[in-house]
Length: 146
Image 1 (cartoon, helix red, strand yellow):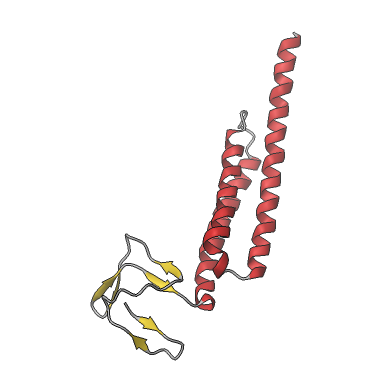
Image 2 (cartoon, one colour; image 1 turned 90 degrees about the vertical axis):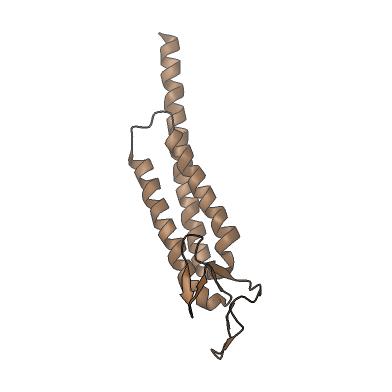
């Protein structure tokens, strides 16, 4: 394994078992090649170096989630509220993922902005879910009264 210091000198050899804490890039499907050796994962231990990469990943996921939630909120076809519950679960899962996995590598300002946006999305989804439940309750009451 290679280690790059702040003065950009490379130390170590490929094959050394050195555990470096940091954000791990790569996946089991992607292999990087360095000096003819295959490397499956790269760990970025400097938080300032990891921030742009992690920010790009997080905001990409956030934009996909935001698009999904807005489509759920706009769509009126859902009568049971299942898609609202699913979208609410996705937002909570994403919030926990940020809290547990990416918190150390994002700036405080980014974390605050994401927390506020996710709270707003969750609030809108729960209000929509309450509306759906109330309409279902009203329909059942109308059927009973007839």
